[in-house]
Image (tube, rainbow, N blue to C red; front, side, top):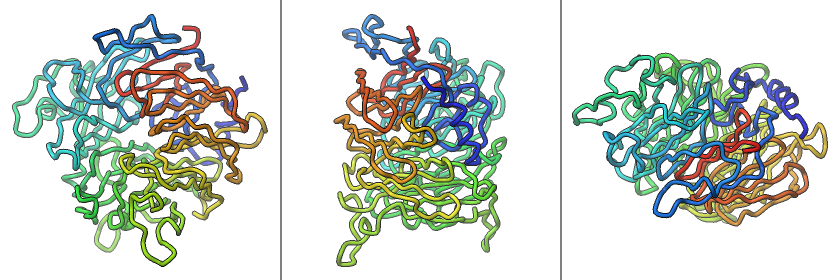
Amino acid sequence: MKNLRPKLYGLLAFAGVALPLAAIAGDWPQWGGTPARNMVSPSDAPMPLDIKGGKKIKGSEDIDPATTKGVKWITKIGSQSYGTPTVADGKILVGTNNETPRDPKHEGDRGVLMCFNESDGSLLWQLVVPKLGAGKVSDWEFLGICSSAAVEGDRCYIITNRGEVVCLDMNGQANGNDGMKDEGAYMAGPGKAPLEVGKLDADIIWSYDMRAELGVFPHNITSSSPLIAAGKLFITTSNGVDWSHTNIPAPQAPALIALDLKTGELLGEEGSGIGQNIMHCNWSSPAYGEIKGKPAIIFAAGDGFCYAFDPEAKEDEEGFLVFPEIWKFDCNLPEYRIDEDGNPIKYATFDGPSECIATPVVDDGKVYISIGQDPEHGEGVGRLSAIDIETGMKVWDYTDIERSLSTASVAPNPDKPGEKLVYVADYRGRLHCVDAKNGRKKWIHDTKSHIWGSTLVADNKIYLGNEDGELAIVDAGQRLKGVWLVEFTAPIYAGPVAANGVLYICTQSHLYAFEVNK
């Protein structure tokens, strides 16, 4: 296979993205691998192709090893998992729920972040988070932790189901209890007797409660993933509507904030009025790029617009530290918002407007972003846009795509050196390949099942899971060819990850590690 790494690194450097050392070594230390959020493996290591997900042992939740192929190891998680795994420094982090308790002292519905040993899948430690007790409106039952963790050095950062940003010691309790000393009270929940802190429990360094500090009102669940960039931690707050889907309880609360990596201190927030125009919720994760040599945070919001912000907050007239807005781009076509008679089109209708749930991808001077909605709203019209990162103006758009939750992969075209292709899925279940230069369709592959997760390009292959528990593997390139299908025992909502020569597939109930010749 062709070595894509040098070309990819050159393009990322051209786009102004600082490459973490872990990423160069083959790790996947945050959502999208790098701050540019491009779903392309930084490594040229060969990926396994001849694999099988296996079948469950009768009367058990365990997978029968004899029915698998290419498996390095499999580990049981909870019953639901949505966040893509993070791989860094010999450890793997996965968000899930507590339906398969690893510690008997943690009973009932909880949000859980599990930390596994990369070599054998053994559990090293876990963060167990009590539910808010607000029901489906802000902490939906059994969803667990939906965020993908971000890692820098010996610290990892996660957004919990309680609307908190938490900094954790990557070594757990193995090197002593640092930072916060009352993990027992935290794990038990308000008004309950503290639990005893054991060796499997996480070591919390600091915690920032966005509900208490900012008045944020999460809708259904606090989601999205932290971004480590420009020396700060950037967080989407998940501020949204209430149970009525028409009222916004916290219109003045920010959709995007920055925190100090070491202390959790608030360093800035957006002040663009996103909260007043939320359609449903703010679930998209921020990305990083550069505009004329200066850092910029790219954020696709719950109002259906994509924003570029200066990460250096300035004090406004009311004394708040606010990110200066560089540009703002409407990701919806005008006809999605207003009908022929000049009337607003109702949200959650097939032809109506959508927010952004996918994460913006920064590559080669452009931002790629699609629109979509909560899967409960069903299918509808969509749009994939390429935006000039300097001007915020449209380069091209592609409307054969329907609503999408999926973050794109922008990779070199193996059929035409020097050119690039964009691979992105829509909720309807189709994988789209378009020309990165002009947005022209190359091909569409229908997986015939809803897709929540994102594409991954690794070893000149596209990996993509769907709701039927099928992993599609497709040859990368401008012509559709080489389609393989791998069946698993549970839906795949999280995106695949390739790190250090291993392919990770996270179903709702199990985390699989596949490697070549195993």
